[in-house]
Length: 111
Length: 115
Image (cartoon, rainbow over all chains, first blue to last red; front, side):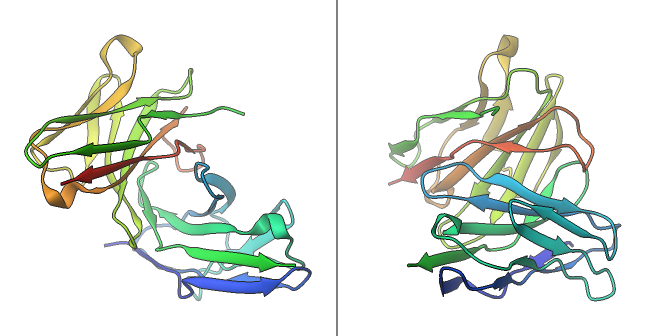
């Protein structure tokens, strides 16, 4: 079946530094990938999505590129802020909004 | 922006009892979902629901689980009877359409503790 792997459980950074959160996936279908962000005591919210190979998608300073050749959809930001501290989930649509999630990566940004 | 509300935020019950988790989806949305997240693990799809019917369910959606949305009110997940392994955070979500590019809106989740 489909699967999503996020290798980092926790990433700690000082504000202003760049970040990359890893996401790889396995599927036999045409992939549609998502990044969701969940701030403390809030609902998960959609951050980015893509189904287009090798095309960068951006939102709120975050960006990701779907690479079908390597089955990856890594999340990046060039300069993290304190407000970026949150839980980030990578997810794969296994068909009609039936999402397969990764375990999530906690990003902690310090002053 | 649009919000999905889940009531209650935390529910504690004894094993074997019935529990109903309530979800107030985005008002014009047509598709509804439940996801389950056990502590320390990823969120997993349980079920999706449209036009009064379950469309798809996963192997996690046991016979003790049921969903309904009577008369356009709350979208509910009922577990009867509950088991210890049902302890988890349950997230409700809704979307306007069913295609992959339709945005899912999630609620905050209901933490269910079965003792």
